[in-house]
Image 1: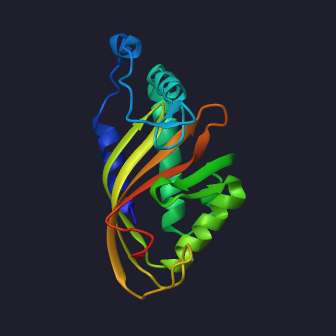
Image 2: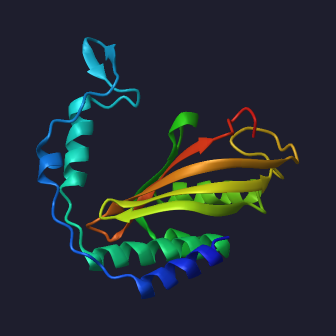
Length: 203
């Protein structure tokens, strides 16, 4: 799935040096612009149902995390382990990269899976419904907040998934996946998957 990408990342590691980064205090101290929101019982909330203050606090905490070369390497290596396990259809290897209370979600489809049991259900369903699913990595960002990747996806819809009957069609779409970093457990806290070019009604 991503062997070529991983090899290129290893080569980049051999050529590059880690440069110290100073904290962006001006950014950290600047008030965040209010997100578009709606009223619910007189209290503004964003489209995900989270009060704006809570979302702002989370973003501030993420911005304040120090950039550390060793932490970068640790997160990067965990992502590589996760990707290789997915390529090899190694479910125990995948689950081993996740915190016990991990959350998998596709927000636009209102789908959510909780914990190791939920992650197992997600992967069993995905890899059964799309046995030839292939992710072609196009962009990746790694930092103390976790990993964000963009990938082109191809797959054949061979089995039913999320209540949608199998079509046998060859699908092409793209995803942006955020792997939040759990600093306490040193594992990923799950995946938040944003899908473009595909809807649950068109699976």
